[in-house]
Length: 130
Image (tube, rainbow, N blue to C red; front, side, top):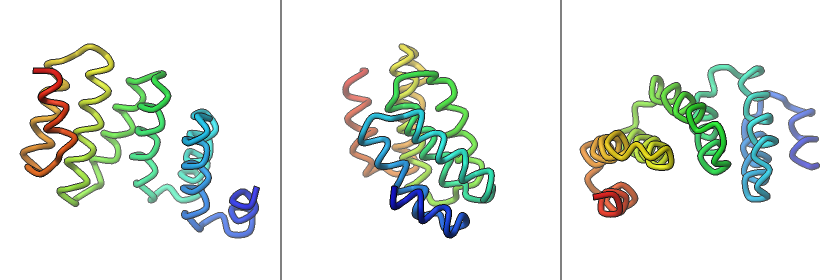
């Protein structure tokens, strides 16, 4: 409730949206998490980090996984930090793995490791599927 109040007071302050979406994720209220992030994007369309969090929310929910790929790809269009790019490709790989597309998952994990050879999650994922 406090985060919702903070959003009402200052709808352009992103922290409250993120904290509320993280709370919803922890409570496994994935639709609510998505709604708050989409609400933020309507008010602050340049807040591209929200696309990453939308993709992660979809991944956690295990529903409409293709939508998660779309959100992550939208995030990739704007992100330049190599480590963040690597994490995003790892997350996309996780979605493809859940979709039983091991080849594409492996490709995404490989991209993650090319971008950041120290990415432990991508290394672990590759071992798991190979």
